[in-house]
Image (tube, rainbow, N blue to C red; front, top):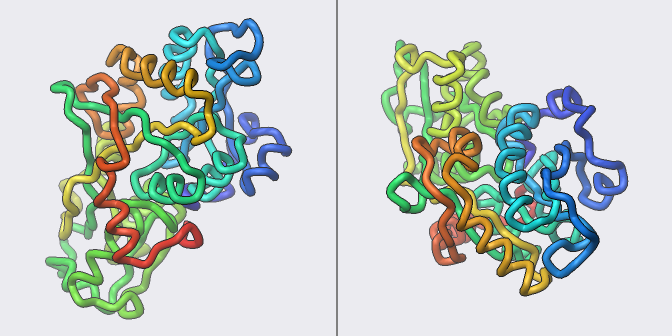
Length: 313
């Protein structure tokens, strides 16, 4: 996913990943400091003296890193091993980094997980639960200005639609699938890939497009920050609920590491994941809960229905 423009990524150059990792993962990344726990050297549960945790840039890295540092620090203490957060350039970079053994853990968007599973063998461990301990979800949506003549997705023929990035679940695949279900050819809509969810919202606010994808996660964040007034706009389409991002582990990880990380994730206090949860529209936050590949079957089905492959990332 080209989730953020290169210009925005460059703005966080001080957090850039080393050139070696950037080359091996076919994309740059931003990284935070390691977790607070100090490792006593490499071990089965602390490979190479640290655990590398990749995150897709579904928001600006300078916003994501402080939130994920809270989660990583809590995880570090439970594992007695530093957990280093790395925000990658896009979906493809994270999939390739895990495939090449450059990441131990990775949080993928639901559709990104499909390709991470298929191409890198990523194994889901846990995801974000609601306060009542059920797997949280979010929805894709298409919005228009309040005074727009567009009333439904059927009215998008001949209009412009801002999407997030290639390979995004809610910012690309689901809106395109909705067009297909409505009998609208993609060639009959001007699809504008804005570079990310916030950028698609901004394109709509600035009047550059007739409509834009805005998922409930971006909507919640922008509303909280005061950068989007929902009453000035109107939603004309919404998807079914999408299971929230899984935290995964590389397939060749030591079984002891898989067990330790799973247990540590499931033991995290809701306050440890609250800041991340706010980005994922999980408010109030619950604990992490175990997930399996079956929880994401609808996304595998979606990839099949749209003939998507890793080349679409």
